[in-house]
Length: 149
Image (cartoon, rainbow, N blue to C red):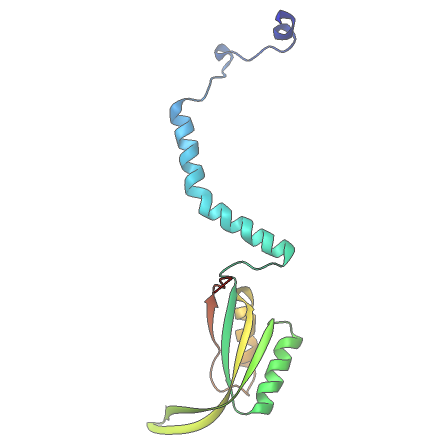
């Protein structure tokens, strides 16, 4: 065994190498524990970007009110053509009550429910605000999907 230590000498404490102390190990362990949520989130986002799979909290639903069914279909088709959503549901006419210039008004509207990635909400909002066909600005909500519920 002596021949091994001559061929592969280990650094000694005199050469500036020392074993990590308990304080150093405690510091590293603390940093790992504190950084875990950040590292986990980054790993999940990277996995989602590479595989296209779902991450809880990365999906949103947006609600858009439209004047009539034809306008709703046109906006829904344009959203899908621009790949701003995975799915758009067009709900039938609903009654809406609102105040306009101090008077209570009533009208019918068509509601679009847009299912998309949270990262696309800004682009979707910009597109909807440029159309003159929607009644109200887009409202969105991030959601977490739970399997089996």
